[in-house]
Every structure is written in structure tokens, then in C-alpha cells.
Length: 148
Length: 306
Image (cartoon, rainbow over all chains, first blue to last red; front, side, top):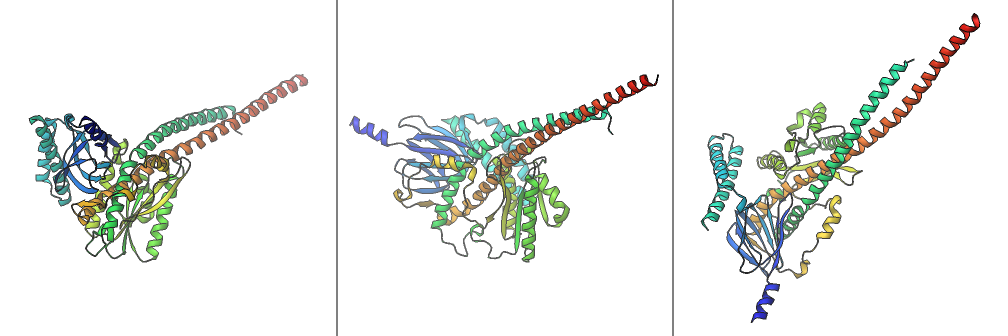
């Protein structure tokens, strides 16, 4: 029994990479990663079927080893490329949830709400709206973290 | 004939010029190192994006309903050229060569009866193209990154502009003209079509790094891919990002190339200044000797006359 658990542990991890356009943010073995997919959250473990998925803004939870507390990272949307041994997450923005400051984000949200209301140019309005959505997702991530 | 004082002044001024050029060379060298590091750091994302694009594009069938970024608009009447140069000069032929290539492209397209629109990135592209192609410039970006190093968000500004115009049907084909970073000594002005999407070649500067990182499973071992949401939707999301990545990469190459070109140019300038100082010093010594000889002759002939 114990032996099989140990084996499962050794075989149970896969390479997790979080990559932004500017650099590789995380590259480590992981046991389970939960990703906020465009069509709902999904978990990835070793041996997952090959999948390419669009990812929306939200919190990625990385569990390095079974039973450990998850490391939470906020990402502003991107794509996930999953194979049996690898999981590459492409994100344009990624921050550790612990580093997010609720007050600052709240302020940002207020400013952006103002921008969205007052923008006259449709292109600018759309861009401000997109930023606002990201900021709101960030805020939700912080609050969710505090509630735990 | 210049006086001794004139020679001294010239030597002093060339010496201070040499000081400036050698300082610029050092600055360019350290900036180059940083720019290269950044270009390398951006490589994994670009590579992963490229792989993903290839996989999705292979699975998706191109129909009239596929995204226009992939299939094109069905015409190629209007071309958009994104010309990327640096903001600052004193980088040898870096900007001049690129703008020459851009002019060639414009002329070629015009002679084929196409309509050409130009977006300039960097102050030099705007200044140089304004002289004869002012009517074609639709937008100029300058001082991207605000003097600091370029971030993806800065590149995105250009990308968003291009995308918005493409969606508005302002052009059919988009091409980036930029200096490809081949090595510290060579920057190759290159033309790359980005809309409609074409499979790209990897940049030479980071080839080695790329090889070292190839640890992905071989394709044969992989199970067939599934997509969530389906291919066409992913493709529609991926294509604009991919454009962003290509734009970012072109800007990074250009930024690294600029520093490399400046370093080389300033190295030459420093050497030339050194040569000039040597030549001027010889002339100065000769003039001084002539002056001394002249005075001696005057004294001797004066003495003889007595």
C-alpha cells in the first residue's frame, strides 16, 4: 500500500510552466493545477488528455505535491496547452494573489468605472471596459483569498 | 596656415568628441546586453504560442467563415506597412537602411497598383518617411516604453491599432518591416507578413537557446488534441495574440539591433577620433618646429647683419 502511494507520488507530477510574453514566471513540477477555463474551471493532473483551452481572467491554483496548500496566482486570461506530461499556461499578466492589494485594486476599479462611463470613442470605451473586467476579476481573487 | 593655437584647439575638441563617443559605446554595450537578455526571456512564450498556433491551424479547416486574420479578406488591394525604427539616431546605417527598404517596398507595391498605408514606429521612421511619403502615413508611434525598456503592453498599443483598423476593413494585408537581429555586427532589414497569418521562421539570435529548451514530448507520443472551446473559437482568440507576439518580437529585435548598431558605429567613431588626434598632433609638432626654426633664422640673420 505504502509503496504504491510512493510510486504514485513519483509518477503523479508533471511539468507546470507559467509563461508571460516577457519571461517564464513559474516552471516547476506540480501534482495538480486548477485553471479557470473559458468554459469553466478544470483541474489538470499528470496523464491528462492533450488539450488546448482558452483561459479567462481568474485564479490558478498550483499544488506542488499531494496534500500541500495551493499556491494561488492571478492571471489576466490566456491559453493553456496541456499534454500528459506538460502543462504550459500562456498568460499576459500574472501576479501572486498574496501580492495583490485590495485597496489599490478597488481604487483602480473606481477609476476605470469612471473611464468607461466617460469614454466617448467606442474603441477607447471597449479597451477601458476590458481593463475594468480584469480589475474586477483581480478584486474577486483577493476577496476570495481573504475569505479562506 | 593655421596657427599653433588653432591646432591645440582642434585637438582638444576632437579629444572631447572621442570621450563622448566612447561613453556612448559603453552605454550601448550595456543596453545591448539587457536587450538581448529580454529578447531571450521572451522566447518561451513566442515558441509556445507558435506551437499552439500550428496545432490549432492544422486542425481547423479554412473556409470562408474562418477568421479573416488567417484566411485574409480575399483581396490584396490595400497594404499596411508597419515600419519599425529607433527613436534616436547615431546608430550608423541602422535606420537609413531600413527606411530605404521600406521605400523600395512602397514603390514596388505602388507600381503594382496597390494602395499603401504606412504606420511608423519610432521617431526616425516618421522623420525620414515624412519627406516623400507623408500622404501614406496613417499613424506614427514614437517613444514607446517612454525611454525605459519596452514591455509587452507597449507593443500591444501598436497591435491594437493594427487590429482595429483591420477589423474596420482599412487594409487587406499587413507587413512588418524591421531590423532583424542576426548578430551584434549584422542587423538585417526584413519584411514579414503578419496578416493574413503565415507560419514564421525562428529568429536566429535565439536559435541555440531554443534547442536547449526542446524538451517537449515528440508529436508521435501525444494523444490527439481536444479543444475547449472548439478550434474555430480558439483560433479567433489566438490569432490576435499571435499578432501581438510577432509585433513584440519585431520590436525587441529592433531594440537589440539598435543598441548593437550604435555600439559598432560609436566604436568606429572612437577609433576615427583617435586617428585624427594622431594626425593633428603630428601637424601641430611640425608647425611648432617650423616656428622655432623660423625664429632661429631670424635671430641668426639679425646677428649676421650687425
